[in-house]
Image (spheres, helix red, strand yellow):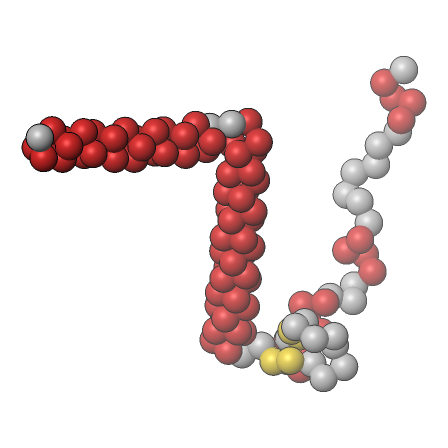
Length: 114
């Protein structure tokens, strides 16, 4: 008698547990729940992408500083922040004040094709 009562109670407990588990899974598969899960994943991916972009930007800035140091480029105090300038005479050669450099080598007459 006690043996039957034990197995009946064990079966009833297993049935309640299985029913609860199935109902939880069914609630996870409703359209509202799936939409909420997708939105959460999208927000999480956006945060990871933002963190990646910030890491890339920090790495770019660090590498730019290393290259500026290696090339001997210095910060111009009159220039805006993060704009580097060539030092002294090299700067004038790099700018090249020759006004003839900006003329086009070839002229194009728009009426030639007609």
